[in-house]
Length: 460
Image 1: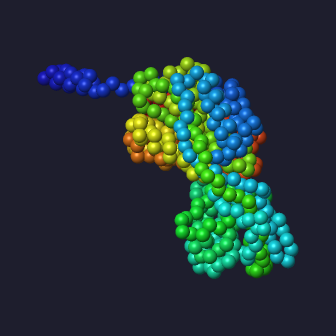
Image 2 (image 1 turned 45 degrees about the vertical axis):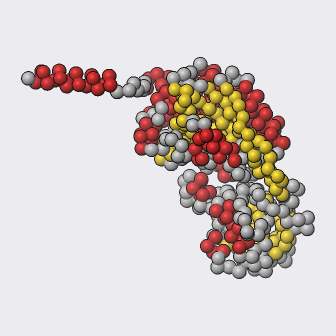
Image 3 (image 1 turned 90 degrees about the horizontal axis):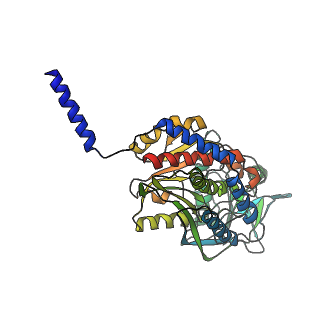
């Protein structure tokens, strides 16, 4: 009786296996070997690093609407066309065209005059050729602003990063609201200008720009970032002389929207070509430096993912796209357009990976997906950990892939390099090619390619 029961159970189990849809069985030994080869290739190829050199040194800063942004589109398209991909194409997108104009002047005027480094915030209006001079009111939050009389004055937002955070992105998130929302909040209370402490955890004489937003029906007032050293000095001087004045001159303006493009390269999947894996970064950058860490590295790493697959003869089961998004810095129009067209064309994205946190040593990935997707990613931890990818955490994604959220069950994944130095360079004149370490950048590309390979093989 027991033997018959066992045979019956075995038959039922066999029938169940036959009835279930075929699923790819993971092969850790083979996958480990492939990932090792991905790293070997990435670490011995200089192509991605030389591509970054060309982008930063020959093209330079690439603010949306600029000639340099247009040149970056043309060059990136040619690079991918030369790789023998299955498809290279562009997506039209209208982008903001803000220009900085002549270098800004910032000056503290009390008993003595002190020049300080400032940089106009993106989208800000200018002051006019004569500049703007007014008394200063220091505040540390939008809530504190409500308690102050700032009519006819310049509001000085001076909330620093909270350096107790281990991940510096969390400190950035805790301070950046004063940059984005500060000018509107100050204008509503009658202020004539805004100065914002630069978004960095370091003490520097370098101003960090970044975008701000105006609101219909609220007066537009000039807004600039001040270096952290300048902010510290201004705060000290205000304690000694509450009536001192600040002079700022900025010649920025917003021109009519300009036509630009997302640039996309694609390798078709061999088994499930309708399932799409995106890897990308933003091609535009602020106009002050060379846009190396933000986000030249992310773009060149994404292209390197495709190069690695081609060079190694890896034929992905699912379609892989490298997307160079335009206008992340001051509008997000590229990311929004990509998501709009994906929805219109009924595309099935299963994963989107973004590299926009600098080209530093890889630490892992942040995953914004459902429980099943996260659990699947955790099964690969032993394959990724030998390469320093210990952090596979919940929550992630990125600005450009964010608009894809809610389209099917796409998992949004943020590549996470070490964060400690990123905000030294972020949005500054010193974000240059020389600040990028070749091996760190190569390791990042290999990390992304390895995860793309696993998702391509087994899905999420």
